[in-house]
Amino acid sequence: MRTLLALLAVWLGQAAAAPFAVQVGDARLALDAPPGFSDVQGTGSPRLLELAESITSPSNRILLFALDDGDVRRFSVGDSPELRRYVIAVTPKGLERDRVTPPAFQAFAADSLRELGAAPQGGDVRAYLDRQPAGRGALLAELRRDPQVVSVLQGARVSPREPRYLLSSTTLMLIRGKVVNLSVYTLFDRDADLDWIRAATMRWVDDLQRINSR
Image 1 (cartoon, rainbow, N blue to C red):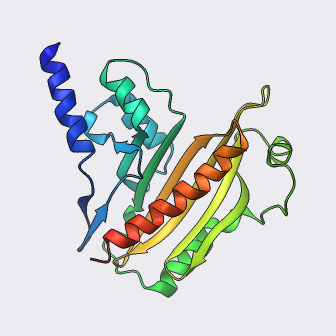
Image 2: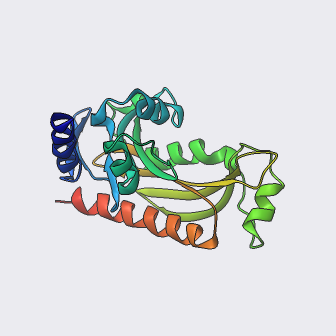
């Protein structure tokens, strides 16, 4: 047991030692989890790896999958993580070897997000999600749009029988000629969760742009 705890302590220390580099085609990108999160791909946990694979398309390569630090601590002592908040960064496998230009990136973003439709104009978010089919994401807002970043906020009613909701943001970024797709997830229990996911998404985007501009 002491050996296991020692190994977990080493892994936790390494997980917190971000940013780290990842090779995408001919480009070397710098990645980092948002503040309060740690990448857990190195745990080798089948459950965590299956969760990561379940929330993205098989056509994407997972670059980072991170849980909040509370869940990492629970996992490190053998408890089940709550999985209330988690984040993932992926890149399209089909574009890994391509050098994507800003116009090509904008076309890719428009095609990827076309099916989301238009965002509602104000109103109660929970009431809006209650009118949508359970389990299907609905566009709530556009968070940012510029030549190298397109970011939107979505929500979904998790169950048709109970008032449980999930918020997620999808952000497509052009970093060093490569497309990176960031997603942030949180359960939606209170209005503060809306403020949190907006702020966490934008801070993550800003941090990744900063560390990749060096």
